[in-house]
Image (cartoon, rainbow over all chains, first blue to last red; front, side, top):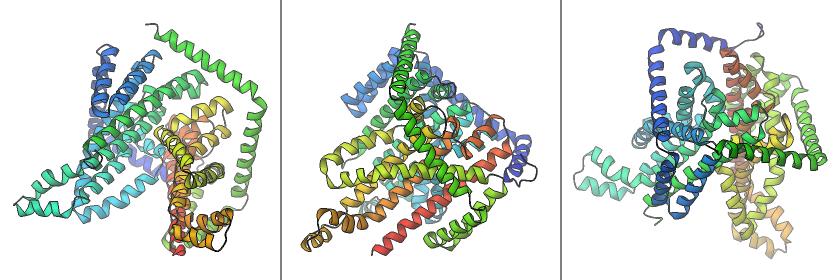
Amino acid sequence: MEPSAFSIGAYISLLVDWLNVNASLPFDLLSSTMEGAVKFLETLLLWPPAFIVMGVFSLGAWRIAGLQVGGITLFGLLFCFAMDLWKATMLTTALVAVSTTAALMVAIPLGIWSATNPFVDRITRPVMDLMQTLPPWVYLIPAVILFSLGRAPAVIATAVFAIPPALRLTALGIREVPVDQLEVGKAFGAAPFQVIWKIQIPAAIPSIMAGVNQCIMMSLAMVVLAGLIGAGGLGGEVVRGLTRMMIGVGVRSGLAIVILAIIFDRVTQGLVTRTDPAAS
Amino acid sequence: MNTASLAAGFDNAVETGVEVISSTFDTLFNRISDIIQLALTGIEQVFLLPPFYLFIAFFSILAWKTAGRTMAVYTLIGFFLCFAMGLWEETMITMALVVTSVIFTLILAIPLGVAAGSNRKVSDITRVLMDFLQTMPPYVYLIPAIAILGFGASPAIVATAIIAFAPAVRLTALGLRHVPSEQVEVGKAFGASPAQALFKIKLPAALPSIMAGVNQSLMLALSMAVIAGIIGAGGLGKEVYRAIRVLDVGKAFDAGICIVILAIILDRISQGAVTLLKTKGR
């Protein structure tokens, strides 16, 4: 860095150093929780023979989204297996699952809160606007700096990145519950939390599921990108292919990512239509 | 397990395939690459040639006209920060990458969107295609681009243009479909030819929607242009990638802040243009 240039980053870097020294405990805790969750899921997915995992996923896809999606899942996963990418595919699945769960744990309560409280809504709205304007790359920088390289920063950056659509669609779903349904509940003497739990949330499920679908797709895009910071999985393979000019590896893992994207998308779309009374 | 040899076979097949394709169409790909490179250098020069304060002034006025005074002040301060952090050139290169790819995208996407907006069959085909394009994680588009065009700015622009394609087509088609039929009828009643109906009635009425597509395209292009730093496109993405690899925290944050500034400026100015067009139309 030229010494003459003014740098905001230099001050942030001082702050980060201070945080690393004085407040490392919460960061370490968060990082090891995420790391542990990913490790656990990865082991769980890789422990049984690959064919059993494929069978379970395909059956699940069939039950949720129909025979065609079940077939796509089976053939897609077989392709990933045959292409020697089974481990990478399962790691990517585990990363997506953990970061989506983390994102939803923040997004759904906050979404419900901002739908019922105008003050919270006034804060979340501009924050979500800003978050959706930023390119994914930007999320990786603070994550890497606070949590160093590896899986933990990847999961945390991904979770943060995937919050906005889930939050927005949850709030939208809750807000669009017809007023007469709420009135009926109140007329029968439902307490406020009963109105939320028994009327608003069930009515908002299709919209929440649409949020889950968006959340998963964004997680996948980000987890793949996080191959750049050493998260491994299919993203790591793509980086290897791109940076060493091994086109074959790149294409192979790129195809596996596309397959995974199609499976995730169709299965969660199936969830949306299954829960939506208007669609069936 | 013999999957490793299967995978190796696949890799070999792909590599020979790519080699055959790129040697057969060598001149064509080189020509395409040259054209893209030429356009990029031209636009880069336009951004870098004037002194930075002229550029900042121009954009601040543009922001004022489209998005109001607060945004103008923000643009002024934001761009000045990029300059002060010593990243002016990188910021301009990234912006040139974005603008070049969006221009290529729009040249292809708007006619396709017009076709999809006025013809049912085209619309059905493009919808399936766009669904597929939007399901894939952006990162994946770098692979075919780099396989055919090699490292550098050209594959970055091709991949970026592909990413930015879908929303431009969709919103153009949407805009055309929502033009009130009475307006078109009035035009026909006054004896407008189909071409006149398109250019003088439908397209002006669809302009806000088309502009919304441009906004989406710009944002997607920016996110991709930054990622493309990894395959040798210059600018802020390359700077972030370099800084992260050598763990230069300060510089990585500086470049990240510039990306955020650029994203907000491009978003708000193009959104401002959308609202401006909407209110003008009424």
